[in-house]
Length: 294
Image (cartoon, rainbow, N blue to C red; front, side):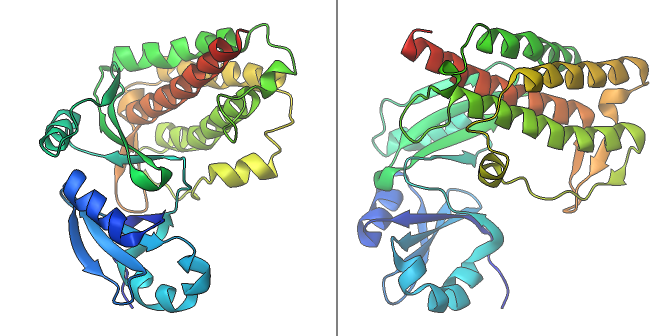
């Protein structure tokens, strides 16, 4: 059986109410409904699709649904966020997305913009999810290198002076602690730097990497209890290593790798992604410190 193109699976409390919310208040389109009323396929504005499934049915009717509708609608590596998670959906224009939402009655929405990185609008939904419609912003090579370089001191300042006990503080119950935020951002750097090195050394080569599961890494590598001192030092060394390479290699930021889906990624794009990712978690650490006055 061929697979669909939906990359997102959302568990909902009441399928009928959720379909009504997404179609009427977000302007999405109902494509197909499973006859028994357990699941539905919706189109998100242009081409993205999402599958809604009645909460609990993955276990009760899971086998039957998995063999029929879920297999036909979903991509094999779809994501299944939990209630309370931020659900990121890329759009070509956040301003256009906001305009569409306003036409459906959303008059006041929270927006964020990181210059040269990303523009986002946050939409609270039913079933405990918050959608983050995001648009990538573009930056010059000089701006990218500055963001990537500045991230070293930004991380060090964010954790400076914290006790081991304070590293366990969180923004809310069930959210990652400062310790976990830091260890995650450094592991993402380690994973991505492997791709950067291949681009620098063998530009144009197809790069085959495994998917990064942040939750599995967090549990298996004991993010919740490990020290971070040497990890922060490693972060500085990793970035200085890449900065040194980019300084000495001609046209370093233009060098590329091809992913297995034949998408080309430049060193500039990879460094920009790493800079933005680290900045996101540094801001989370700063919010936690402000919340707890430390």
